[in-house]
Length: 150
Image (spheres, rainbow, N blue to C red):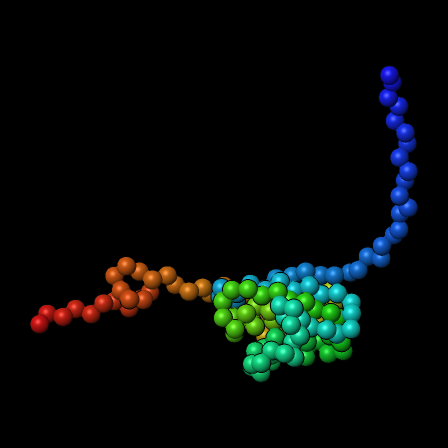
């Protein structure tokens, strides 16, 4: 009994249209944001919610700073940001950095990079400061317990 292999039928190949997208990250304190930018209709989503639904106006303003600086280019890009960790302001600043980096990487414009750096360096560079850990002889990182001799 000899086994002969029958040739398998080849599946028709369809060339999928490659979508140009850029993925970047931004950090601030304990918050980490990952932004995905691609061609689209100008939809901005933060954790799968539209930017307009963010209730805190100050947070919304922080996140949209790079979009205001870019201008009309932002209306042709879909931006999806996933943020986790930290508080609302730290998350907003991490998202802002991730969005600015992604737009810059997507466009590849040196003039836009200069514009971002002139406006605020932290749009592209992360803030390296972190919370100092608590020490064993006090209630906080630097404060010490008071002594009482009475």
